[in-house]
Image 1 (cartoon, helix red, strand yellow):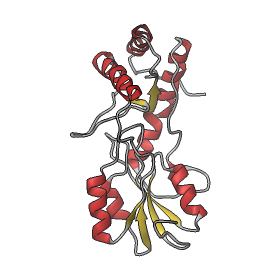
Image 2: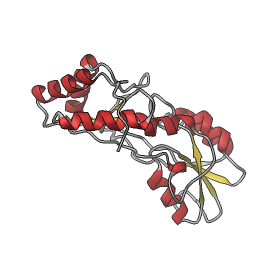
Image 3: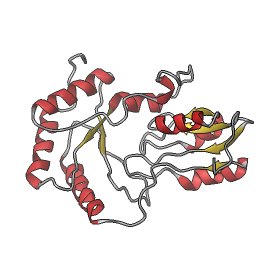
Image 4: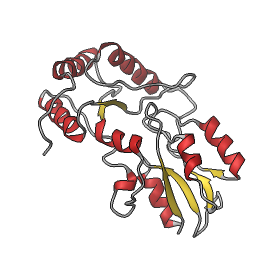
Length: 222
């Protein structure tokens, strides 16, 4: 509302991790227009956002996801060019806390030792807060990721699916638009623990379990 979004307006929203934003847009009587994400950051892709801007668009709503900020330089440039407001969600805290430092240390440990999964990427010049340490499980789609998750839990490693579906594939927002990076991320992503309370032994357990599985489980998902 403060950004001037009114009933009948369009707002560009990321199709991955943007469900609450889409709900907020719809609550105002506006229409969420879904754009794809950058595969490395999981955040709104400026090029995809530019491609879906309509004449009725009044705002862009990027989401900073898992502790990695969206490309605000390009998104703000797009907004200025098209005369749009920018409303950010999930902003990364500007102050580096002790907890953030600890999570980064845990993430660095996992980065050095994990194999069989696609580890998180960090854009050049960006500080990742690692609110969640999200990997990709390669394979033939969601069954591979879900089987990997169950196998890790059987080995005592807590893990979870951070985003269960792309928003444009969810009931109430279903659309025929094809946004392949968002859809692929929803099928492949799995969050591993980097809690500040974890010990080195806890992290070693995560690494051992993941590396033993190799990211290639093929059993069908339940």
